Image (cartoon, rainbow, N blue to C red; front, top):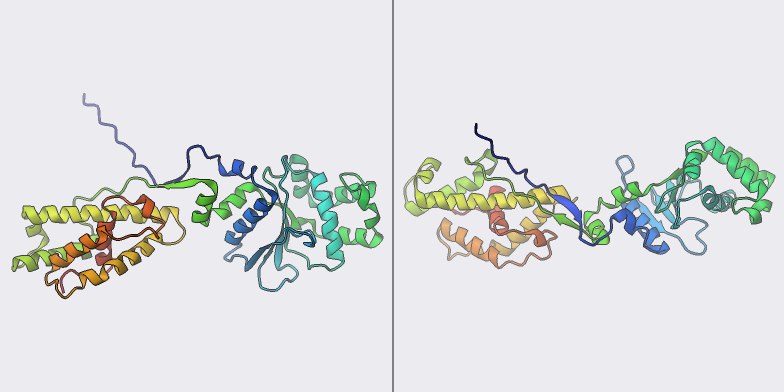
Length: 355
């Protein structure tokens, strides 16, 4: 009985933490209070709420901020229901009601004094998230209100010096307030939002994009690659001076090998294109193609180059000396990538080999 050979599963494109680097959620425990505020703001700038992002996100965490560490607006003006407040608490342990209550007392004081309009949401953000007691209060808004007022009246949970602030007017205000506005913003969500800016995310957390295996070159040319393949055939035909089709190319050892090498570089660049699509939000591969296009255009359009194969060879020569370090993809380039971008440019009809 013949035992079938085991096939190696192609390695996918992915993001990996550098050796010796701690995971992002652990790294956030080590940063300063100010860095924590800046991280939350950066994450909020990438957050999608429905189909839109915040119009502006600003760190206010200094004296005179009125308890607003991060202010995120849905429009230019600061209006009721048109903004979210993010409270940054960088503590060693999980947040407790005793951590939250003094902040809420300050918040209600400024709100009653019309220091700012009512936010849509008030988020508590901490590296180790909320502990079970505070978590349960977020899940039961009415109980949250009751527990806050009880602690305020008793002067417990850090509110000893704030009892006098609980006037009849303030109590009525708190009782009328919608406590569903208060929520926990978990670290996992902040990391997900921050990761939408993959370049900044990788730089901050020591994460490297790892390029997987390139796609295998199909035996037969596929429909989506026929533009550059047919352009090469036109160049072969021009060189021979007689009509040539794909079948004749495959029957000719020299042209068959040349076409095979060209297709190999095309699929190498195709692997880079897929890597770009899988890892980065922006179309970094298209940006690289534009760099290549500008870098080789003058060379291959030289009036001295009369034949298609001359222009092809000039493009390949020019690309080998082209500096593309401005591209975020440059550290993940493989041998066939840059020559392959020439064929991608032809395939997208930016260039022709035969005039």
